[in-house]
Image (cartoon, rainbow, N blue to C red; front, side, top):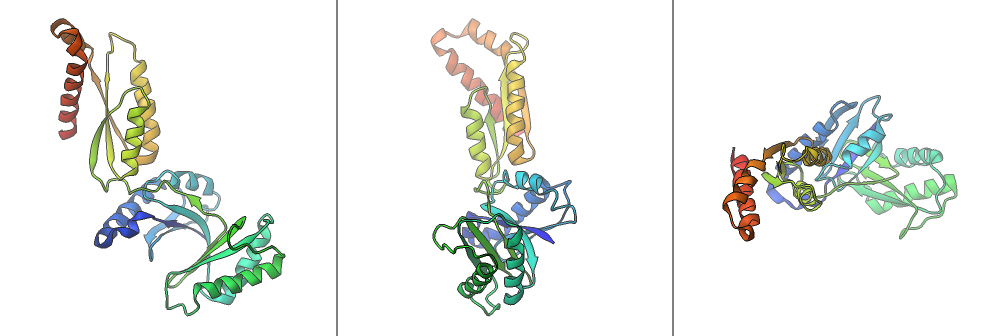
Length: 277
Protein backbone atom coordinates (compact mmCIF):
# COMPACT_ATOMS: atom_id res chain seq x y z
CA UNK A 1 0.00 0.00 0.00
CA UNK A 2 1.28 3.43 -0.96
CA UNK A 3 1.06 6.66 0.99
CA UNK A 4 2.54 10.10 0.51
CA UNK A 5 4.62 11.47 3.36
CA UNK A 6 4.37 15.27 3.43
CA UNK A 7 6.85 17.32 5.43
CA UNK A 8 6.07 20.91 6.28
CA UNK A 9 9.03 23.20 6.80
CA UNK A 10 8.59 26.35 8.87
CA UNK A 11 5.26 25.26 10.39
CA UNK A 12 7.29 23.29 12.89
CA UNK A 13 8.38 26.64 14.39
CA UNK A 14 4.88 27.91 15.13
CA UNK A 15 4.70 26.77 18.76
CA UNK A 16 1.22 26.66 20.27
CA UNK A 17 -0.32 27.90 17.00
CA UNK A 18 1.09 24.99 15.03
CA UNK A 19 -2.06 22.76 15.22
CA UNK A 20 -4.08 25.49 13.50
CA UNK A 21 -1.49 25.91 10.71
CA UNK A 22 -1.34 22.13 10.25
CA UNK A 23 -5.13 21.84 10.11
CA UNK A 24 -5.21 24.50 7.38
CA UNK A 25 -2.60 22.55 5.42
CA UNK A 26 -4.60 19.33 5.81
CA UNK A 27 -7.69 21.11 4.48
CA UNK A 28 -5.75 22.46 1.50
CA UNK A 29 -4.21 19.08 0.66
CA UNK A 30 -7.65 17.44 0.75
CA UNK A 31 -9.05 20.11 -1.57
CA UNK A 32 -6.09 19.88 -3.95
CA UNK A 33 -6.37 16.09 -4.25
CA UNK A 34 -10.14 16.05 -4.62
CA UNK A 35 -11.23 13.64 -7.34
CA UNK A 36 -8.22 11.36 -6.95
CA UNK A 37 -8.09 8.03 -5.13
CA UNK A 38 -7.10 9.38 -1.73
CA UNK A 39 -8.50 7.70 1.36
CA UNK A 40 -7.26 9.89 4.21
CA UNK A 41 -5.11 12.95 4.89
CA UNK A 42 -4.06 13.23 8.52
CA UNK A 43 -1.28 14.81 10.60
CA UNK A 44 1.01 12.33 12.30
CA UNK A 45 4.06 13.18 14.44
CA UNK A 46 5.37 16.23 12.58
CA UNK A 47 4.24 15.28 9.09
CA UNK A 48 1.13 14.57 7.04
CA UNK A 49 0.34 11.06 5.84
CA UNK A 50 -1.78 10.90 2.68
CA UNK A 51 -3.11 7.36 2.34
CA UNK A 52 -3.77 6.37 -1.27
CA UNK A 53 -6.44 4.00 -2.45
CA UNK A 54 -6.02 1.11 -4.92
CA UNK A 55 -5.79 3.50 -7.90
CA UNK A 56 -3.56 6.00 -6.11
CA UNK A 57 -0.33 4.47 -7.32
CA UNK A 58 -1.38 4.84 -10.94
CA UNK A 59 -2.36 8.47 -10.27
CA UNK A 60 1.01 9.38 -8.78
CA UNK A 61 2.03 11.80 -11.55
CA UNK A 62 -1.10 13.88 -11.06
CA UNK A 63 -0.78 13.69 -7.27
CA UNK A 64 2.82 14.84 -7.50
CA UNK A 65 1.92 17.74 -9.78
CA UNK A 66 -0.82 18.98 -7.47
CA UNK A 67 1.18 18.63 -4.25
CA UNK A 68 4.18 20.42 -5.79
CA UNK A 69 2.05 23.59 -6.08
CA UNK A 70 0.64 23.75 -2.54
CA UNK A 71 2.15 26.45 -0.29
CA UNK A 72 3.18 25.14 3.11
CA UNK A 73 4.77 21.89 1.89
CA UNK A 74 8.53 21.60 2.29
CA UNK A 75 8.90 18.25 0.53
CA UNK A 76 6.98 15.03 0.00
CA UNK A 77 7.58 11.48 -1.14
CA UNK A 78 5.60 8.48 -2.32
CA UNK A 79 6.23 5.91 0.37
CA UNK A 80 5.62 2.21 0.96
CA UNK A 81 4.17 0.96 4.24
CA UNK A 82 6.11 -1.60 6.22
CA UNK A 83 5.79 -3.12 9.70
CA UNK A 84 7.84 -1.15 12.27
CA UNK A 85 10.26 -4.00 12.85
CA UNK A 86 13.91 -3.57 11.91
CA UNK A 87 14.32 -7.02 10.34
CA UNK A 88 11.15 -6.59 8.28
CA UNK A 89 12.18 -3.09 7.22
CA UNK A 90 15.64 -4.25 6.12
CA UNK A 91 14.27 -7.22 4.19
CA UNK A 92 11.50 -5.23 2.50
CA UNK A 93 13.82 -2.39 1.45
CA UNK A 94 16.40 -4.86 0.12
CA UNK A 95 13.74 -6.51 -2.04
CA UNK A 96 12.30 -3.21 -3.23
CA UNK A 97 15.63 -1.80 -4.45
CA UNK A 98 15.80 -4.55 -7.05
CA UNK A 99 13.30 -2.58 -9.15
CA UNK A 100 15.34 0.65 -8.94
CA UNK A 101 17.97 1.67 -11.54
CA UNK A 102 21.43 0.95 -10.16
CA UNK A 103 22.92 4.19 -8.76
CA UNK A 104 26.62 5.00 -8.48
CA UNK A 105 26.17 5.28 -4.71
CA UNK A 106 23.50 5.21 -2.04
CA UNK A 107 22.83 5.89 1.62
CA UNK A 108 20.07 5.21 4.13
CA UNK A 109 18.49 8.23 5.87
CA UNK A 110 16.39 7.06 8.82
CA UNK A 111 14.14 9.13 11.09
CA UNK A 112 12.70 7.68 14.28
CA UNK A 113 9.69 9.84 15.11
CA UNK A 114 8.58 7.62 18.01
CA UNK A 115 11.36 7.11 20.55
CA UNK A 116 9.50 4.11 21.96
CA UNK A 117 10.91 2.26 18.99
CA UNK A 118 14.02 1.09 20.79
CA UNK A 119 16.54 1.11 17.94
CA UNK A 120 18.13 4.53 17.24
CA UNK A 121 18.30 6.01 13.76
CA UNK A 122 22.05 5.38 13.17
CA UNK A 123 21.57 1.68 13.93
CA UNK A 124 18.59 1.49 11.56
CA UNK A 125 20.74 3.07 8.85
CA UNK A 126 23.61 0.67 9.50
CA UNK A 127 21.49 -2.50 9.45
CA UNK A 128 19.36 -1.58 6.44
CA UNK A 129 22.35 -0.19 4.53
CA UNK A 130 24.30 -3.41 5.07
CA UNK A 131 21.35 -5.47 3.86
CA UNK A 132 20.91 -3.35 0.73
CA UNK A 133 24.63 -3.46 -0.05
CA UNK A 134 24.71 -7.22 0.38
CA UNK A 135 21.75 -7.58 -1.99
CA UNK A 136 22.97 -5.17 -4.68
CA UNK A 137 26.69 -4.51 -4.29
CA UNK A 138 26.04 -0.77 -4.48
CA UNK A 139 28.62 1.63 -3.10
CA UNK A 140 27.81 3.54 0.09
CA UNK A 141 28.35 7.32 0.09
CA UNK A 142 27.15 9.18 3.19
CA UNK A 143 27.96 12.69 1.96
CA UNK A 144 26.78 12.89 -1.66
CA UNK A 145 24.85 9.75 -2.62
CA UNK A 146 23.09 9.44 -5.95
CA UNK A 147 20.21 7.62 -4.22
CA UNK A 148 19.05 8.43 -0.70
CA UNK A 149 16.64 5.82 0.67
CA UNK A 150 14.44 7.40 3.32
CA UNK A 151 13.02 5.42 6.24
CA UNK A 152 10.58 6.88 8.75
CA UNK A 153 9.45 4.97 11.82
CA UNK A 154 6.27 6.29 13.45
CA UNK A 155 4.12 5.12 16.34
CA UNK A 156 2.44 2.11 14.76
CA UNK A 157 3.74 2.20 11.21
CA UNK A 158 6.87 2.68 9.16
CA UNK A 159 7.56 3.89 5.64
CA UNK A 160 10.37 3.90 3.15
CA UNK A 161 10.84 5.85 -0.06
CA UNK A 162 13.44 6.43 -2.75
CA UNK A 163 12.96 10.04 -3.77
CA UNK A 164 11.86 13.29 -2.14
CA UNK A 165 9.94 15.79 -4.24
CA UNK A 166 10.46 19.51 -3.52
CA UNK A 167 7.50 21.56 -2.36
CA UNK A 168 6.73 25.27 -2.60
CA UNK A 169 7.48 25.98 1.06
CA UNK A 170 5.97 29.00 2.78
CA UNK A 171 2.69 28.92 4.71
CA UNK A 172 -0.65 27.17 4.01
CA UNK A 173 -3.29 29.04 2.05
CA UNK A 174 -5.51 31.21 4.21
CA UNK A 175 -3.24 31.42 7.26
CA UNK A 176 -2.28 35.03 6.49
CA UNK A 177 -5.76 36.33 5.77
CA UNK A 178 -7.16 37.82 2.58
CA UNK A 179 -5.56 40.52 0.42
CA UNK A 180 -6.43 42.29 -2.82
CA UNK A 181 -4.01 42.58 -5.71
CA UNK A 182 -4.30 45.08 -8.57
CA UNK A 183 -3.48 42.91 -11.56
CA UNK A 184 -2.05 44.55 -14.66
CA UNK A 185 -0.79 42.93 -17.82
CA UNK A 186 2.85 43.12 -16.74
CA UNK A 187 5.06 40.75 -14.76
CA UNK A 188 5.28 42.69 -11.47
CA UNK A 189 1.73 42.24 -10.19
CA UNK A 190 1.40 38.46 -10.80
CA UNK A 191 4.82 37.91 -9.20
CA UNK A 192 3.72 39.97 -6.19
CA UNK A 193 0.50 37.94 -6.02
CA UNK A 194 2.45 34.69 -6.15
CA UNK A 195 4.71 35.80 -3.31
CA UNK A 196 1.65 36.69 -1.23
CA UNK A 197 0.06 33.30 -1.95
CA UNK A 198 3.25 31.55 -0.90
CA UNK A 199 3.14 33.40 2.43
CA UNK A 200 -0.33 32.08 3.15
CA UNK A 201 -2.53 34.92 1.85
CA UNK A 202 -5.72 34.33 -0.10
CA UNK A 203 -5.51 36.79 -3.00
CA UNK A 204 -8.45 38.50 -4.70
CA UNK A 205 -7.63 40.11 -8.07
CA UNK A 206 -8.77 43.43 -9.52
CA UNK A 207 -8.09 44.33 -13.15
CA UNK A 208 -8.94 47.73 -14.65
CA UNK A 209 -9.71 47.73 -18.38
CA UNK A 210 -10.78 50.25 -21.02
CA UNK A 211 -13.28 48.17 -23.00
CA UNK A 212 -15.14 49.12 -25.20
CA UNK A 213 -12.76 52.01 -25.95
CA UNK A 214 -10.00 49.42 -26.38
CA UNK A 215 -10.19 45.69 -27.14
CA UNK A 216 -10.72 42.87 -24.63
CA UNK A 217 -7.08 41.84 -24.85
CA UNK A 218 -6.15 43.01 -21.36
CA UNK A 219 -9.15 41.20 -19.84
CA UNK A 220 -8.19 37.95 -21.54
CA UNK A 221 -4.63 38.28 -20.32
CA UNK A 222 -5.83 38.95 -16.76
CA UNK A 223 -8.00 35.86 -16.87
CA UNK A 224 -5.07 33.76 -18.07
CA UNK A 225 -2.84 35.07 -15.28
CA UNK A 226 -5.46 34.37 -12.62
CA UNK A 227 -5.99 30.91 -14.04
CA UNK A 228 -2.30 30.17 -13.62
CA UNK A 229 -2.16 31.57 -10.08
CA UNK A 230 -5.29 29.65 -9.08
CA UNK A 231 -3.35 26.42 -9.51
CA UNK A 232 -1.52 27.46 -6.32
CA UNK A 233 -4.36 28.85 -4.21
CA UNK A 234 -7.07 26.54 -5.69
CA UNK A 235 -9.81 29.17 -5.74
CA UNK A 236 -9.72 32.80 -6.91
CA UNK A 237 -11.98 35.76 -7.55
CA UNK A 238 -11.26 38.26 -10.32
CA UNK A 239 -12.99 41.64 -10.62
CA UNK A 240 -12.91 43.23 -14.07
CA UNK A 241 -13.49 46.95 -13.57
CA UNK A 242 -14.38 49.16 -16.58
CA UNK A 243 -12.14 52.21 -16.26
CA UNK A 244 -12.37 53.84 -19.70
CA UNK A 245 -15.11 56.36 -18.85
CA UNK A 246 -13.22 57.52 -15.74
CA UNK A 247 -10.07 57.92 -17.81
CA UNK A 248 -11.93 60.12 -20.27
CA UNK A 249 -13.25 62.31 -17.44
CA UNK A 250 -9.75 62.63 -15.98
CA UNK A 251 -8.37 63.70 -19.38
CA UNK A 252 -11.03 66.41 -19.62
CA UNK A 253 -10.62 67.79 -16.09
CA UNK A 254 -7.09 67.10 -14.80
CA UNK A 255 -3.81 68.72 -15.96
CA UNK A 256 -1.59 66.25 -17.88
CA UNK A 257 1.18 66.10 -15.28
CA UNK A 258 -1.31 64.95 -12.58
CA UNK A 259 -3.32 62.43 -14.55
CA UNK A 260 -1.30 59.31 -13.70
CA UNK A 261 -1.49 60.13 -9.99
CA UNK A 262 -5.27 60.60 -10.22
CA UNK A 263 -5.65 57.33 -12.15
CA UNK A 264 -3.83 55.51 -9.38
CA UNK A 265 -5.81 57.18 -6.62
CA UNK A 266 -9.06 56.17 -8.29
CA UNK A 267 -7.87 52.61 -8.77
CA UNK A 268 -6.81 52.34 -5.14
CA UNK A 269 -10.15 53.69 -3.91
CA UNK A 270 -12.13 51.26 -6.08
CA UNK A 271 -9.92 48.32 -5.10
CA UNK A 272 -10.31 49.24 -1.41
CA UNK A 273 -14.10 49.20 -1.73
CA UNK A 274 -13.96 45.79 -3.42
CA UNK A 275 -11.57 44.46 -0.77
CA UNK A 276 -13.93 45.51 2.04
CA UNK A 277 -17.08 44.29 0.28
